[in-house]
Each structure stands twice: as structure tokens, then as C-alpha cells.
Length: 294
Image 1 (spheres, rainbow, N blue to C red):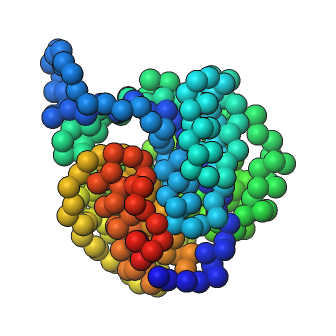
Image 2: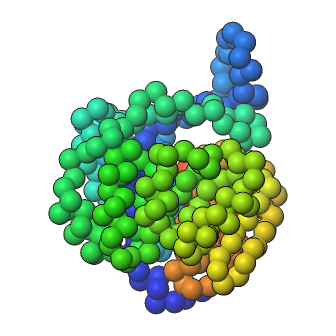
Image 3: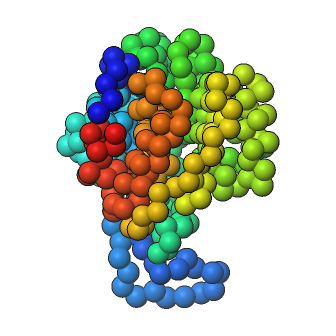
């Protein structure tokens, strides 16, 4: 097991809690009208802040989640799960209600996500409260949630390491720019990119410390000023549910970075965490822990 005092670092995760309805199909709909009888499904909490915070917590990292939910039954269920898992959190009331997704999954782990409701673009959380949290934490994770976008400048000015996950960024969306500007450490996927390497090099040219691009079952690529390019394959494991794989990868990567491990080892830890995730029906595998990962 790796040990390092940096694991005492306090990580603040901003944004990203939803209630998800997950439906499992042999194959995704192809655009034709169809009636599907009796399929496996589950209802669970989701989104990128939940996944990252939950995985980091199981890895022994001191993490605190600030997010928004509605004053409704779905928000209460999110609160209950976070309490049960022992995840430190502050949930702010979103007057529009809890964000909810319907995820259609095929047997290969591919997904169609339907945002049946979305969170507000601003929530009642003052700059003073945000600053107090930024001051009290060592590492900031700024998620690409609408109500987090107005916080980007304040997060950028906090003089702390800032991480963000751009998910399926297409390389040109203006929505993502405040998050890119705020962060020194960036993760994204290649799902919507025809030339991910050029984009990663361009991001590094703007002064980033690290850019990591995941390719699902094809592995991961990373570039930093100290290591140059690194490409690693994914682990070949049976896929039960791919929801949360990217967030678990992020948590494993950050877990290694907090210990100042070489980048290749950080990427390997992220790959292990993602592999555990996809073998589980839950957002974070019950098996995930520091000893198992390392």
C-alpha cells in the first residue's frame, strides 16, 4: 500500500448530483418506433460529483462535496445515500428541483443519456461561503455543471490546484471555456474528438500541468510537461454497467497524484478504479478501497 502525507490533503468537489433511472437493453434504439417489454432497470443516485466524491471517499481521501438538489423525494434519496456512505457533503436547495437522468444502456456499456430535468444555472450559495470552502481545502475539483460556471473565476483565483473533467467535450464548445481557464489539471474523453492529441497539445500550450484523455475500452492517453506522452491500454474485464467509469478513473488518478506517484502509476490506478466500476451495477464498486487499488 502506498502511503504519503499528501493523502491528508482536503479535496473539495463542486457540483454534480442527480437521481438516475437506468434501463438495460441488448441494443440501443435505432430510431424506429418500438415497444420493449420487461427489461432490467434500477433507480440510483448519479452524476459526476457523486461519482468522484464517493470513489475518493472509499480510497481514504478527505473529500467534501458541495452540490444542489431539489426539495423533493429524489433530493431526499440523494441525501440519504450520501449520509449512509459517510460522504461529507453540503446540498443546497435548487428551486427547480433535483436533476434527473434516464440512461439507456446496451450490453456493451454504450449509453444514451436523457436529461429529463436539469439543475438551475445559479443557486443560492454566496461568494463568501464559496471562498470559505476554497480556503479550507487543498485541491479543488470544478465540475462542468451549469451553476458551477459562475464560480469558475473565483475558483481560478484561489491559488490552489484545480482539476476539471470536460467529459465528451468536442474541442470547440464555448460552454466549457471557463472550466478550462480555471483548471491546471484536465481530464476529458475522446468520444467527440477526431484529433484528441492536437487538442491535448493545444491545452498544454496554454500552460496546463496535465491533460488526460480517456478512450473507454481503448485505454487512456496523457501528456504533461515532465513526462511527455503516455498511452496505456484499458483492463479487459466484463462490463456490467459503465456508468461512473470516467469518474472512478478520475478518482484513482487523483488518488495517485495526491501521493506524488509517477504519472504512469497514477494512470494505472485510474484504470484499475474504472475497471472495478464497470464490473459493478453501482456508480462506485463496493470493492473499491485503497488496499485493493494499490
